[in-house]
Length: 308
Image (cartoon, rainbow, N blue to C red; front, side, top):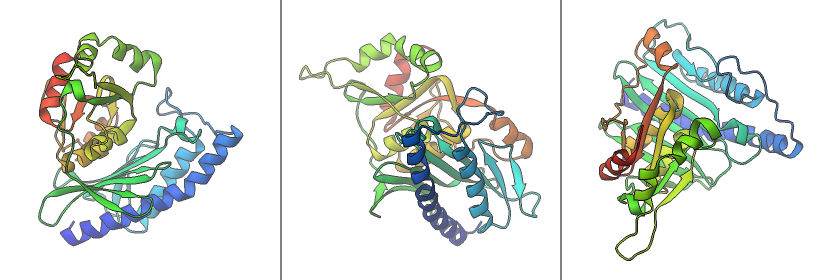
C-alpha cells in the first residue's frame, strides 16, 4: 500500500469508528436501562460474554471496510479469519475486536472497539484505532507516516486532536499501574498474591508519601492510557491477552514512545504473526503475557517484582 493510500485509509477508519460508536451507543444504553442485554451463546470462546451487539459490530465493520478496500483478510474475534474480495492473497489483514468489554458495555459502564490494519509485506501494523464508546476521549490512534515514522494521537468527542508522545517517566513507587482484574479466579487472585510487587508499589517516596496505586483497566485501551500518560503502566501476567486485545494498543503505545515487554524482559515485536493463513489461525488462538509502561526502567522494575 502506498503512503498516500495509507494516509487516506487511516482517515477513513478514524472517521468510521466514531460513526459506528454513535450507532451502537444508544442501543447499549437502552440495554442497560431495560436489563435486556441480548446475550447469546459464544461457541468460539465459551467462557466469554457475547451479545448480539458484538455480532452487529462485527458485521458492520466488515460492511464498511468492504466499501473502501477491494480485498483484505478479515480477522475478527467473532469469526474465523477469511478473505474478503477477489484477491486470494491480499496484503492487508484487518484485525478487529468489535466490542471489547461487552459485558460492561451492555450496562453502559465501559465499552471499547479495536481495529488494526496490518501489512503482511511489511510484517507490521500500519494503522490502529481504539475507540472509547462512553467517554470524552473517544479515539486513540497510530499510523505509519510517509516518512516511515509511527505517530500516535488521540481525538476527543469535541474533535480536538492531541499528539501522544510523552508517556510517563514515573518510577514504581510513584506509579499508577493497572490490570484487567475483573475475573475473580483467573485474574484477581493471582494479582492479589503478588506481594513483592505490592510492597514495591507501596514504598514511600523521599518525602514519606506513598503514591503508588493499583487500578483496573481493559484490553487495548489500557495500553492507550499508558500512551497518553493517563496511567504509568499496565500488566498482564495471569491469563494473557489475545492478539486482538494486545496488538492495537501495543502499536499505539509503541508509536507514542512507550515500551511493551514480555515477562522475560524481551521487547514484544510489532510483527504479531499475521503473515500467512496458517500463522494467522495460530496467532488468533494464542495469548501473550506482558508489561506495558511509559518507560523501560519502570517496565523492568515491575518485571523484577513479579512472580510468575
